[in-house]
Length: 333
Ligand SMILES: NC(=O)C1=CN([C@@H]2O[C@H](COP(=O)(O)OP(=O)(O)OC[C@H]3O[C@@H](n4cnc5c(N)ncnc54)[C@H](O)[C@@H]3O)[C@@H](O)[C@H]2O)C=CC1
Ligand SMILES: NCC(=O)COP(=O)(O)O
Picture 1 (cartoon, rainbow, N blue to C red):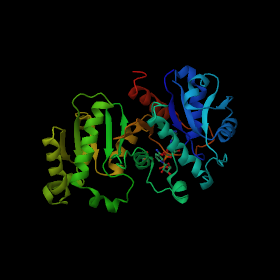
Picture 2: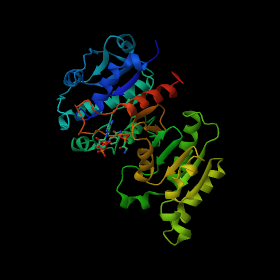
Picture 3: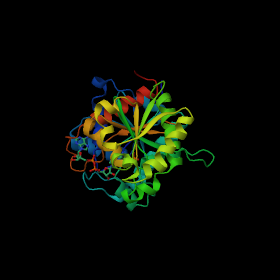
Picture 4: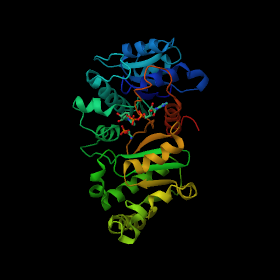
Protein backbone atom coordinates (compact mmCIF):
# COMPACT_ATOMS: atom_id res chain seq x y z
CA UNK A 1 0.00 0.00 0.00
CA UNK A 2 1.45 3.46 -0.88
CA UNK A 3 2.61 5.60 2.02
CA UNK A 4 -0.01 8.07 3.33
CA UNK A 5 0.28 11.84 3.41
CA UNK A 6 1.25 13.22 6.82
CA UNK A 7 -1.20 15.95 7.91
CA UNK A 8 -0.41 18.01 10.99
CA UNK A 9 -3.25 19.12 13.24
CA UNK A 10 -2.07 22.74 13.58
CA UNK A 11 -3.42 25.19 16.15
CA UNK A 12 -6.26 23.47 18.06
CA UNK A 13 -8.11 26.75 18.58
CA UNK A 14 -8.07 27.45 14.85
CA UNK A 15 -9.85 26.07 11.78
CA UNK A 16 -7.18 23.53 10.80
CA UNK A 17 -8.77 20.66 12.79
CA UNK A 18 -12.24 21.56 11.41
CA UNK A 19 -10.98 21.42 7.85
CA UNK A 20 -9.09 18.16 8.09
CA UNK A 21 -12.05 16.51 9.86
CA UNK A 22 -14.50 17.87 7.27
CA UNK A 23 -12.32 16.71 4.39
CA UNK A 24 -11.97 13.27 5.95
CA UNK A 25 -15.74 13.06 6.23
CA UNK A 26 -15.93 13.72 2.45
CA UNK A 27 -13.03 11.41 1.55
CA UNK A 28 -15.07 9.21 -0.78
CA UNK A 29 -16.81 11.88 -2.85
CA UNK A 30 -13.56 13.84 -3.09
CA UNK A 31 -11.51 10.73 -3.91
CA UNK A 32 -8.90 11.61 -1.30
CA UNK A 33 -5.88 9.39 -0.98
CA UNK A 34 -5.10 8.16 2.54
CA UNK A 35 -3.62 10.56 5.06
CA UNK A 36 -2.63 10.22 8.69
CA UNK A 37 -3.05 13.09 11.12
CA UNK A 38 -0.28 13.91 13.60
CA UNK A 39 -2.03 15.46 16.59
CA UNK A 40 -4.22 14.50 19.52
CA UNK A 41 -6.95 11.90 19.08
CA UNK A 42 -9.20 12.90 22.03
CA UNK A 43 -9.12 16.55 21.03
CA UNK A 44 -10.05 15.64 17.45
CA UNK A 45 -12.95 13.52 18.73
CA UNK A 46 -14.20 16.49 20.75
CA UNK A 47 -13.94 18.86 17.78
CA UNK A 48 -15.67 16.37 15.47
CA UNK A 49 -18.54 16.08 17.97
CA UNK A 50 -18.78 19.89 18.20
CA UNK A 51 -19.02 20.07 14.42
CA UNK A 52 -21.65 17.32 14.32
CA UNK A 53 -19.43 15.06 12.25
CA UNK A 54 -20.24 11.40 12.73
CA UNK A 55 -16.88 9.76 12.15
CA UNK A 56 -14.50 7.34 13.81
CA UNK A 57 -11.05 8.41 14.91
CA UNK A 58 -8.50 5.68 15.53
CA UNK A 59 -4.95 5.78 16.84
CA UNK A 60 -2.64 4.50 14.13
CA UNK A 61 0.86 4.58 12.71
CA UNK A 62 1.93 5.68 9.23
CA UNK A 63 2.26 1.97 8.38
CA UNK A 64 -1.30 1.11 9.47
CA UNK A 65 -2.93 4.33 8.24
CA UNK A 66 -3.64 3.12 4.72
CA UNK A 67 -5.70 0.19 5.97
CA UNK A 68 -7.47 2.25 8.67
CA UNK A 69 -8.38 5.21 6.43
CA UNK A 70 -11.51 3.70 4.87
CA UNK A 71 -13.21 3.12 8.25
CA UNK A 72 -11.64 5.70 10.59
CA UNK A 73 -9.44 8.78 10.59
CA UNK A 74 -5.96 7.49 11.46
CA UNK A 75 -4.19 9.63 14.05
CA UNK A 76 -0.66 9.43 15.42
CA UNK A 77 -1.66 10.72 18.84
CA UNK A 78 0.91 12.64 20.86
CA UNK A 79 0.82 12.78 24.66
CA UNK A 80 -0.19 16.16 26.10
CA UNK A 81 -3.09 18.38 27.03
CA UNK A 82 -5.19 19.78 24.20
CA UNK A 83 -8.55 21.33 25.07
CA UNK A 84 -11.32 22.01 22.56
CA UNK A 85 -11.60 25.80 22.91
CA UNK A 86 -12.23 27.25 19.43
CA UNK A 87 -10.94 30.79 19.05
CA UNK A 88 -9.05 30.71 22.35
CA UNK A 89 -5.46 29.47 21.93
CA UNK A 90 -3.85 27.89 24.96
CA UNK A 91 -0.07 27.61 25.15
CA UNK A 92 -0.48 24.29 27.04
CA UNK A 93 -1.13 22.70 23.65
CA UNK A 94 2.14 23.96 22.15
CA UNK A 95 4.20 20.78 22.82
CA UNK A 96 1.64 18.71 20.89
CA UNK A 97 1.42 21.26 18.04
CA UNK A 98 5.21 21.45 17.71
CA UNK A 99 5.75 17.71 18.26
CA UNK A 100 3.20 16.88 15.57
CA UNK A 101 5.19 18.86 13.00
CA UNK A 102 8.47 17.28 14.09
CA UNK A 103 7.07 13.73 13.97
CA UNK A 104 5.39 14.27 10.60
CA UNK A 105 8.68 15.46 9.11
CA UNK A 106 10.58 12.57 10.68
CA UNK A 107 8.10 10.05 9.25
CA UNK A 108 8.35 11.65 5.81
CA UNK A 109 12.14 11.81 5.81
CA UNK A 110 12.13 8.11 6.73
CA UNK A 111 9.81 7.33 3.79
CA UNK A 112 6.88 6.23 5.99
CA UNK A 113 4.79 9.15 4.68
CA UNK A 114 4.88 10.71 1.18
CA UNK A 115 4.67 14.41 1.98
CA UNK A 116 3.72 16.77 4.80
CA UNK A 117 0.58 18.92 4.67
CA UNK A 118 0.44 21.33 7.58
CA UNK A 119 -2.62 22.95 9.13
CA UNK A 120 -2.11 26.56 10.21
CA UNK A 121 -0.37 27.37 13.48
CA UNK A 122 -0.86 30.45 15.64
CA UNK A 123 2.62 31.80 15.85
CA UNK A 124 1.87 33.97 18.89
CA UNK A 125 0.77 30.96 21.00
CA UNK A 126 3.88 29.02 20.05
CA UNK A 127 6.24 31.95 20.67
CA UNK A 128 4.69 32.34 24.14
CA UNK A 129 5.54 28.67 24.77
CA UNK A 130 9.17 29.17 23.73
CA UNK A 131 9.06 28.28 20.02
CA UNK A 132 12.01 30.05 18.47
CA UNK A 133 11.29 29.74 14.74
CA UNK A 134 9.40 32.44 12.84
CA UNK A 135 7.06 29.83 11.30
CA UNK A 136 6.81 26.35 9.81
CA UNK A 137 9.11 27.25 6.94
CA UNK A 138 12.20 27.82 9.04
CA UNK A 139 11.33 25.04 11.53
CA UNK A 140 10.99 22.53 8.71
CA UNK A 141 14.42 23.47 7.37
CA UNK A 142 15.95 22.81 10.80
CA UNK A 143 14.15 19.47 11.01
CA UNK A 144 15.57 18.55 7.58
CA UNK A 145 19.17 19.46 8.43
CA UNK A 146 21.66 16.82 7.36
CA UNK A 147 25.05 16.57 9.09
CA UNK A 148 24.41 19.99 10.63
CA UNK A 149 23.74 21.63 7.27
CA UNK A 150 20.36 23.41 7.23
CA UNK A 151 18.85 23.76 3.73
CA UNK A 152 17.67 27.21 2.61
CA UNK A 153 13.87 27.03 2.88
CA UNK A 154 12.01 29.07 0.29
CA UNK A 155 8.34 29.96 0.79
CA UNK A 156 6.26 29.88 -2.39
CA UNK A 157 2.59 30.80 -2.67
CA UNK A 158 1.12 29.01 -5.64
CA UNK A 159 -2.12 29.01 -7.60
CA UNK A 160 -2.47 27.72 -11.16
CA UNK A 161 -0.02 29.90 -13.11
CA UNK A 162 0.73 32.54 -10.43
CA UNK A 163 3.59 31.59 -8.14
CA UNK A 164 5.23 34.10 -5.84
CA UNK A 165 8.16 33.82 -3.45
CA UNK A 166 8.96 36.32 -0.69
CA UNK A 167 12.75 36.74 -0.40
CA UNK A 168 12.39 37.88 3.20
CA UNK A 169 9.59 36.30 5.21
CA UNK A 170 8.49 36.96 8.79
CA UNK A 171 10.62 40.00 9.57
CA UNK A 172 9.72 43.57 10.45
CA UNK A 173 9.45 45.72 7.33
CA UNK A 174 12.15 48.02 8.77
CA UNK A 175 14.63 45.12 8.54
CA UNK A 176 13.90 44.29 4.90
CA UNK A 177 16.41 46.61 3.14
CA UNK A 178 19.25 45.22 5.28
CA UNK A 179 18.21 41.62 4.55
CA UNK A 180 17.98 42.03 0.77
CA UNK A 181 21.46 40.79 -0.09
CA UNK A 182 22.99 39.57 -3.33
CA UNK A 183 23.83 36.18 -1.80
CA UNK A 184 20.27 35.61 -0.59
CA UNK A 185 18.84 36.57 -3.99
CA UNK A 186 21.16 34.22 -5.89
CA UNK A 187 20.64 31.36 -3.42
CA UNK A 188 16.87 31.80 -3.56
CA UNK A 189 16.85 31.91 -7.36
CA UNK A 190 18.88 28.68 -7.43
CA UNK A 191 16.31 26.92 -5.21
CA UNK A 192 13.40 28.31 -7.25
CA UNK A 193 14.94 27.31 -10.59
CA UNK A 194 15.71 23.79 -9.34
CA UNK A 195 12.32 23.15 -7.73
CA UNK A 196 10.27 24.68 -10.54
CA UNK A 197 11.81 21.95 -12.66
CA UNK A 198 11.86 19.16 -10.08
CA UNK A 199 8.62 19.78 -8.18
CA UNK A 200 6.46 21.59 -10.76
CA UNK A 201 7.75 19.91 -13.93
CA UNK A 202 8.45 23.20 -15.74
CA UNK A 203 11.28 22.42 -18.14
CA UNK A 204 12.76 25.92 -18.55
CA UNK A 205 11.39 28.20 -15.84
CA UNK A 206 11.33 31.97 -16.36
CA UNK A 207 11.52 33.97 -13.15
CA UNK A 208 10.67 37.65 -12.72
CA UNK A 209 12.37 39.50 -9.88
CA UNK A 210 10.49 42.41 -8.33
CA UNK A 211 12.27 45.56 -7.27
CA UNK A 212 12.35 46.74 -3.67
CA UNK A 213 11.66 50.43 -4.20
CA UNK A 214 8.81 52.10 -6.05
CA UNK A 215 9.42 51.87 -9.82
CA UNK A 216 12.41 49.62 -9.04
CA UNK A 217 14.26 52.68 -7.78
CA UNK A 218 13.63 54.90 -10.85
CA UNK A 219 17.28 54.80 -11.86
CA UNK A 220 18.51 55.32 -8.29
CA UNK A 221 16.45 58.40 -7.56
CA UNK A 222 14.01 56.47 -5.29
CA UNK A 223 16.51 54.19 -3.54
CA UNK A 224 19.66 52.46 -4.72
CA UNK A 225 19.06 48.80 -3.65
CA UNK A 226 17.58 47.88 -7.03
CA UNK A 227 20.65 49.09 -8.93
CA UNK A 228 23.34 48.24 -6.42
CA UNK A 229 22.18 44.86 -5.05
CA UNK A 230 19.27 43.31 -6.95
CA UNK A 231 20.39 43.93 -10.55
CA UNK A 232 23.92 42.52 -10.02
CA UNK A 233 22.48 39.47 -8.25
CA UNK A 234 20.17 38.80 -11.21
CA UNK A 235 23.20 39.12 -13.49
CA UNK A 236 25.08 36.55 -11.40
CA UNK A 237 22.13 34.15 -11.52
CA UNK A 238 21.80 34.59 -15.27
CA UNK A 239 25.52 33.81 -15.64
CA UNK A 240 24.72 30.42 -14.02
CA UNK A 241 22.02 29.78 -16.62
CA UNK A 242 19.00 30.81 -14.50
CA UNK A 243 16.43 32.64 -16.63
CA UNK A 244 15.74 35.51 -14.23
CA UNK A 245 14.80 39.03 -15.30
CA UNK A 246 14.48 42.28 -13.38
CA UNK A 247 14.35 44.12 -11.12
CA UNK A 248 10.87 44.94 -12.39
CA UNK A 249 8.61 47.50 -10.69
CA UNK A 250 6.58 45.53 -8.15
CA UNK A 251 3.24 47.16 -8.92
CA UNK A 252 3.12 46.78 -12.70
CA UNK A 253 4.70 43.33 -12.52
CA UNK A 254 1.45 42.09 -10.99
CA UNK A 255 -0.62 43.39 -13.88
CA UNK A 256 -1.83 39.96 -15.15
CA UNK A 257 -0.47 40.17 -18.72
CA UNK A 258 2.94 40.85 -17.18
CA UNK A 259 3.15 38.09 -14.58
CA UNK A 260 1.68 35.58 -17.02
CA UNK A 261 4.92 35.83 -18.99
CA UNK A 262 6.73 34.19 -16.07
CA UNK A 263 6.57 30.89 -14.19
CA UNK A 264 7.24 32.55 -10.85
CA UNK A 265 7.96 35.91 -9.26
CA UNK A 266 10.63 36.53 -6.65
CA UNK A 267 9.33 39.36 -4.46
CA UNK A 268 11.41 41.21 -1.91
CA UNK A 269 9.16 40.99 1.15
CA UNK A 270 6.23 39.06 2.60
CA UNK A 271 3.28 41.23 1.58
CA UNK A 272 4.68 41.99 -1.89
CA UNK A 273 4.46 38.24 -2.58
CA UNK A 274 1.34 37.29 -0.64
CA UNK A 275 -1.07 40.11 -1.48
CA UNK A 276 -1.26 39.22 -5.20
CA UNK A 277 -1.98 35.53 -4.48
CA UNK A 278 -4.51 36.22 -1.74
CA UNK A 279 -6.23 38.75 -4.00
CA UNK A 280 -6.67 36.41 -6.94
CA UNK A 281 -6.94 33.07 -5.13
CA UNK A 282 -7.49 33.30 -1.38
CA UNK A 283 -9.69 30.22 -1.50
CA UNK A 284 -7.46 28.00 -3.59
CA UNK A 285 -3.85 29.16 -3.26
CA UNK A 286 -1.38 27.05 -1.34
CA UNK A 287 1.93 27.57 0.42
CA UNK A 288 4.74 25.27 -0.69
CA UNK A 289 8.16 25.11 0.94
CA UNK A 290 10.88 24.77 -1.69
CA UNK A 291 14.45 23.76 -0.93
CA UNK A 292 13.64 20.81 1.34
CA UNK A 293 14.32 17.12 0.74
CA UNK A 294 10.60 16.50 1.36
CA UNK A 295 7.40 17.95 -0.10
CA UNK A 296 5.60 20.32 2.31
CA UNK A 297 2.41 22.15 1.41
CA UNK A 298 -0.16 24.03 3.45
CA UNK A 299 -3.29 26.05 2.80
CA UNK A 300 -2.56 29.73 2.21
CA UNK A 301 -4.73 30.98 5.07
CA UNK A 302 -4.20 31.15 8.81
CA UNK A 303 -6.03 29.98 11.90
CA UNK A 304 -9.18 32.13 11.37
CA UNK A 305 -10.20 32.08 15.04
CA UNK A 306 -13.46 33.82 14.14
CA UNK A 307 -14.58 30.69 12.24
CA UNK A 308 -13.08 27.89 14.34
CA UNK A 309 -15.59 25.34 15.60
CA UNK A 310 -18.40 26.75 13.45
CA UNK A 311 -18.07 24.53 10.38
CA UNK A 312 -18.25 27.65 8.18
CA UNK A 313 -14.59 27.78 7.06
CA UNK A 314 -13.88 26.90 3.45
CA UNK A 315 -11.81 23.76 2.95
CA UNK A 316 -10.88 24.57 -0.66
CA UNK A 317 -7.31 25.73 0.04
CA UNK A 318 -6.70 22.73 2.33
CA UNK A 319 -8.07 20.43 -0.39
CA UNK A 320 -5.80 22.13 -2.92
CA UNK A 321 -2.84 21.47 -0.61
CA UNK A 322 -3.69 17.76 -0.40
CA UNK A 323 -4.10 17.62 -4.19
CA UNK A 324 -0.77 19.31 -4.82
CA UNK A 325 0.96 16.97 -2.36
CA UNK A 326 -0.49 14.07 -4.35
CA UNK A 327 0.64 15.57 -7.65
CA UNK A 328 4.16 16.28 -6.43
CA UNK A 329 4.56 12.76 -5.11
CA UNK A 330 3.25 11.18 -8.27
CA UNK A 331 -0.09 9.91 -6.94
CA UNK A 332 -2.48 11.84 -9.22
CA UNK A 333 -2.23 14.18 -12.16
N1 LIG B 1 0.75 28.24 7.51
C1 LIG B 1 0.44 28.80 8.68
O1 LIG B 1 0.66 28.21 9.72
C2 LIG B 1 -0.18 30.17 8.71
C3 LIG B 1 -0.51 30.71 9.92
N2 LIG B 1 -1.05 31.96 10.00
C4 LIG B 1 -1.39 32.44 11.34
O2 LIG B 1 -2.81 32.57 11.44
C5 LIG B 1 -3.11 33.55 12.43
C6 LIG B 1 -4.24 34.44 11.95
O3 LIG B 1 -3.79 35.18 10.81
P1 LIG B 1 -4.67 36.17 9.97
O4 LIG B 1 -3.78 37.18 9.39
O5 LIG B 1 -5.84 36.62 10.78
O6 LIG B 1 -5.17 35.35 8.71
P2 LIG B 1 -6.33 34.26 8.55
O7 LIG B 1 -6.08 33.64 7.23
O8 LIG B 1 -6.39 33.36 9.71
O9 LIG B 1 -7.70 35.09 8.51
C7 LIG B 1 -7.89 36.22 7.68
C8 LIG B 1 -9.39 36.35 7.30
O10 LIG B 1 -9.71 35.35 6.36
C9 LIG B 1 -10.76 34.52 6.84
N3 LIG B 1 -10.43 33.13 6.50
C10 LIG B 1 -9.24 32.52 6.69
N4 LIG B 1 -9.29 31.25 6.29
C11 LIG B 1 -10.54 31.05 5.83
C12 LIG B 1 -11.22 29.90 5.30
N5 LIG B 1 -10.62 28.72 5.14
N6 LIG B 1 -12.52 30.04 4.95
C13 LIG B 1 -13.14 31.23 5.09
N7 LIG B 1 -12.56 32.35 5.59
C14 LIG B 1 -11.27 32.24 5.97
C15 LIG B 1 -10.80 34.71 8.34
O11 LIG B 1 -12.09 34.45 8.87
C16 LIG B 1 -10.35 36.16 8.47
O12 LIG B 1 -11.46 37.00 8.28
C17 LIG B 1 -1.78 34.25 12.75
O13 LIG B 1 -1.33 33.77 13.99
C18 LIG B 1 -0.85 33.82 11.66
O14 LIG B 1 0.48 33.73 12.07
C19 LIG B 1 -1.30 32.72 8.89
C20 LIG B 1 -1.00 32.22 7.64
C21 LIG B 1 -0.43 30.89 7.46
N1 LIG C 1 2.01 34.32 5.83
C1 LIG C 1 2.41 33.00 5.52
C2 LIG C 1 2.61 32.24 6.75
O1 LIG C 1 2.48 32.75 7.83
C3 LIG C 1 2.98 30.83 6.61
O2 LIG C 1 4.16 30.62 7.29
P1 LIG C 1 4.71 29.17 7.58
O3 LIG C 1 4.18 28.80 8.91
O4 LIG C 1 4.27 28.28 6.48
O5 LIG C 1 6.19 29.38 7.59
